[in-house]
Amino acid sequence: MARFTLPRDIYYGRGTLDELKNLKGKKAVIVVGGGSMKRFGFLDKAVANLESAGFEVRLFENVEPDPSVETVMKGAAMMREFEPDWIISMGGGSPIDAAKAMWVFYEYPETSFEEIIQPFSFPELRKKAKFLAIPSTSGTATEVTAFSVITDYSKGIKYPLADFNITPDVAIVDPDLAETMPEKLTAHTGMDALTHAIEAYVSTLNSPFTDPLALKAIHMVFDYLPASYKGDKTAREQMHYAQCLAGMAFTNALLGIVHSMAHKTGAAFSTGHIPHGCANAMYLPFVIKYNAKTAEARYADIARSVGLTGNSDAELVQALCDKINKYNKILNIPRTMQEFGVNEEEFLQKLPEIAKNAVGDACTGSNPRAITPAEMEKLLKCCYYGTEVDF
Ligand code: FE
Image (cartoon, rainbow, N blue to C red; front, side, top):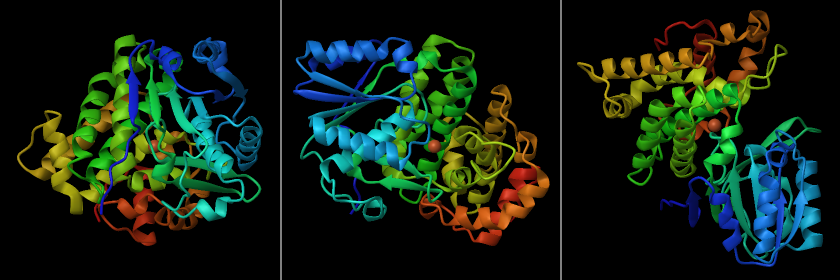
């Protein structure tokens, strides 16, 4: 049996933050991050809208990037005391992911991270509250997905939570909130969205339900990302919708090894964190070459649908890779890990461990072509040196 799950309502367009005036309920908690939503006045506006709808509102502020188990537990404790019937999360991926996990521990105080780590094993939510998400960045699409990532800093591990129970009830996709994104974040999150759509399209779980969403998202990213990067407001708006469409595809079709590699290399090197979207953008053309052995026709579909031409599927796949490389260049994204500044000696020393971890990542299972740790080492080397993938 396959399942396709999305939020019941997605409000989109400029000014849709005002939809909060029409929400029905008594008590709402708003979960936010470090302060940009407050600084730009969106938090005050959300509070005012909810109060005009008769809500008693409480804030949970300062969720950190890569939210911790402690933050989640603090938020859940606050919710158990306040007893909200709506959880509203606003901002980048982090506060929304944190709020999703708080929701679980608010409704089920006795459960533990270990118990919900098994994908699609959550207890049934919505006994106490519903969930509304308002994204301020155009990339993760957590406002429509069944995923959340929480970090246990004491154990040095990330819990990737996955269950349709945490797919939000309502998403408000208001492009006004995304206008404040800096240039670099726009580039990285935009390429993250492209990667979501391409990985969903070739995933082993792709379906007639997810394909149109993925393809439309790919078209829109190619059409609008360069102008959005330069600050064009209309393009920014379209990118905010494109990333949401990509999210609707990958929450149901899942992802692949571009994400496995980005997850395991992101925090691996002493030379600095590789931002998620930047890592995806660098690895994507190499992974396409690797996966093309089994998924060539699907990549060729994508290439044709964005107007590329070629005399064979192999030529179309090459044209798609060339196009992605061209976009990375426009967006000032390095082509390889070496160019990014990862130290060669450190890379080679950590490579076996990283390759093993990447193969074991939750995203590897739905990749169109299977991969062994030895092949993953070779592939990561190609991504480091920029050499041809020929295996
Ligand atoms: Fe991603």
